[in-house]
Amino acid sequence: MRKEVYPHTNFMYYVYILKSRKDGNLYIGSTNDLKRRLDEHNNGLVFSTKSRRPFELVYYEAYKSEKDARNREKNLKLRSRAFAQLRKRIEESLL
Image 1: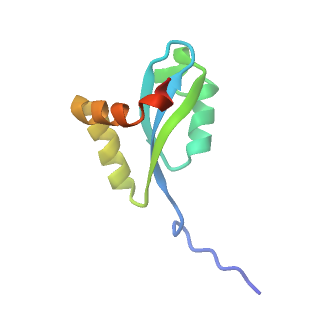
Image 2: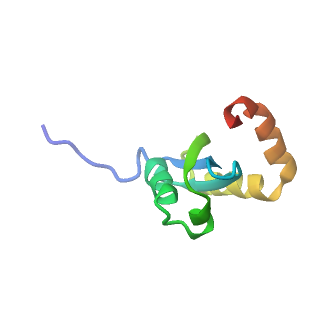
């Protein structure tokens, strides 16, 4: 039996929050490969977080639409109220 491959049928996009183990600060990002992106952050391949390694993943949301994920990332980065509400929901995970 031949297995057919349909590109992007099971593709997900993620908005994630990382916590720096060095300074305790949080970083918000988005990706289509959560494990690869966390590895990139922890291996110093992301300029904006290179000096704050290592990181732990504390939260993520999954979306079928890349546009939805990017909009959510933008919303969390630009609207402090949205981020404050999320922080309140996940406060035990941030300890």
